[in-house]
Length: 136
Image (cartoon, rainbow, N blue to C red; front, side, top):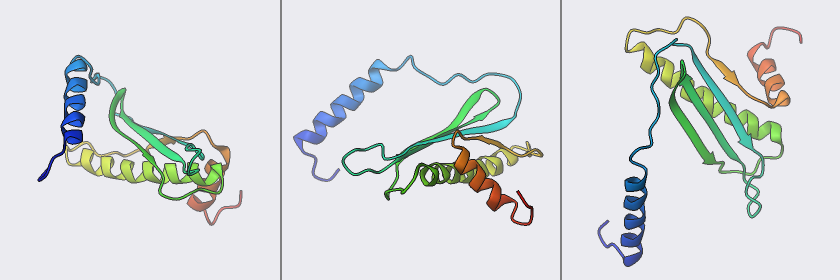
């Protein structure tokens, strides 16, 4: 910002054109239930150049999308289970933050938040860690 280049001005111009062209886009806010749930997913070794995975999740309050995240992971995962488990961990951090935020509006969550995941190994791993005294 202190010493902008022509490339910086070009990038800014592209950004402003994008914003101008997407003014009619938006996220719908719908009336309905206040059930909190999250979908978490990951793409193992998504980048063929560095073999790093992409993690993502989206959180809904009722049918309204209130939070989302997508990021390339900083390390290389050894398995799809590992990368999916990391994705769920990021989603859990977000859910905890959202639950605390919603509680500030006097809407405490009394039921657990459902986190959907499509990797059976990551689900099994999470179940082992969540119920260490139970036999599976």
